[in-house]
Image (tube, rainbow, N blue to C red; front, top):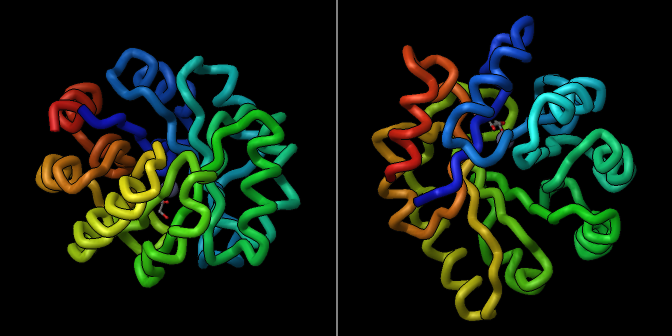
Length: 215
Ligand code: DX5
Ligand code: ZN
């Protein structure tokens, strides 16, 4: 069964406390927290103060996805805010190996996200150091976009890289995940499914999380 990581980006921000309580009761293991800076992506979401509050509202894993330039400047700040996993973008990190080392030195798991037009092979040299690869199945910046179908091939390629290296890196899929593609993603090799709109716009979010979990 995949790990389910609902993205709070799709929640009603006036009722974040209720969203956290709902997720705490659900089968979701992780909270996926999307930080956007208006520079790496053409949108601005939320940052450190919101994550600090969410941290107080849950004991579940806080999976922080940084869609920002120069993420290496904010590693200790996100650790202090409560991140358990800190994911940076390959495209935003000219010194990726150093950035991964710093994230781990702070006691967090290190994630690396790749955009839809970035080849999985770019991560091969560092794969043993990476705890999680976040495969973007939409162009980052917005929730509610359509799933890009070529993601399956990328997951298969990435799975091969991980297996060949004897690594234990988790594969996370982010963007457009729903009840129709979840099982196929799991079959291709996904370990973690992020879902924003699918969960928060569902009539019964807890039931939708269970459905995704059964994939
Ligand atoms: C997109 C974010 C995603 C987003 C997913 O840039 O990284 O985590 O919240 O939202 P849905 O599930 O609605 O595509
Ligand atoms: Zn995300």
